[in-house]
Image (spheres, rainbow, N blue to C red):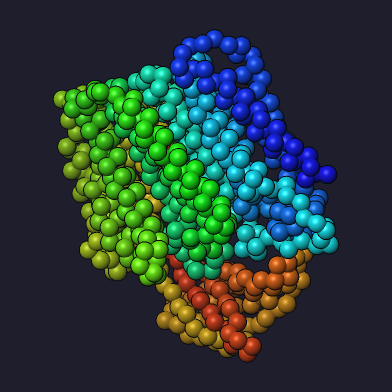
Length: 624
């Protein structure tokens, strides 16, 4: 029953989308007037149908309707209700349904809140609905979440156990608000080129959408990193995995765009560059979708490995790139206003080139192994050494520019406060010297990274104090984001250099002495949970120089639906460091492989990353 109802809604949604395209397409050639009430009703109907179809799928997962193949494949009766709900988008079909829902919601909201130029608004609606139509057909024909299975199975297969986690349950919706949110300024950029709606007005119409998508893209990446840290059992939060990179590349483009649109709004310069970034951001989002769903990547969190799906997305991506490129060339503005008369404009543009460098570096590192495998049948892996070599040295000038750039004004004749500059440099150097004397484990490059990040932190904190003294908070969002970024780089650098890692084998009842730690493997306990059995290790970790004892209880979980074994880390967290322990069985014996790590300042890495996103969220409520 739910299958027939859901499929009917999907078909009806395609029909309504075609009607919206028909009415809005009249603005491609002229200002033909038509009944706007019809368009508004169609958009409202499209939104209502899409929301109902999504909640129909959600309901099917909640009641475990096994006649629907996606429910059968990714759920079962005994799964906790929270993960039944998360299972709705924890698979290819359901996640694509969420993708279409967000496309439609953004289309409706943009149409509702942009009334300044009707031709521009309706052309944006036209291009947005081309995207909606493309993904709706993909959903209906190739990735139907309501496809039936006959006969109806008695029990489902269940969701991948490593996806049954609170952080990963909210990770896709957050990330999709960023990914898919970029579609609206892709459509607006195409509409701007055709309608001639440019300059300050165009910048103002897309600025909030850019900030919104960037803030939630940041949140999605953070939550995914937290999940990777404690769920995968590797003790890290970023591994330059191709799927991680697929979310990071559009983030760089969004960050560059969020800065560039400021120049367009204030000085009506860089219009062409803003258009390019609008197009590039969504193209990179769809590229990431292709990489994740085509089966050409091997990752712990790819959604699908279907070549037919990959071909469809690749074809759609190529059409999108080609059409947007042709429209851009045909409507390319002859001239842009220069920014030479603005110190702040030059700093913002420099920021953009840094972002483009990071983007290109990650893009090459992600796709180069694919090309070598396709054309030369050679499998290679591009890992942290490549990214560290190229990105870390460039971070040093970037952090400095992030500090002094915001203090510049739009007037070319303005100058920096050199007394303040020198004082901050000296403070950063002395703090770094103190850290080096206490910790004694810094390389030259690490010292430079620490000094430059401290420079940004101190500079930003001084600005923050000035804003509060003056009773002004209009620069608070930018200051919060920059402070968060400086703290993030500082704590990642310290964490990387000060982490302690040990890998060894141990039997129950044995004690292992490692430098300053005594690890006592006390006992094993078997526990029955709702949808898995758990073998829990009881460990006491004694720090020898303080005699403090911490209890850590890593788990080996055995799931029956599907039959999977996962290794769950036990983590003791405080503001200064994490103690991280995992265990895994070796063969059929009673020997277990133990990985013990002391990870300093992990809590501050998460706080710093959330500060970056908070800066974007605050900016949404700041109209200046």
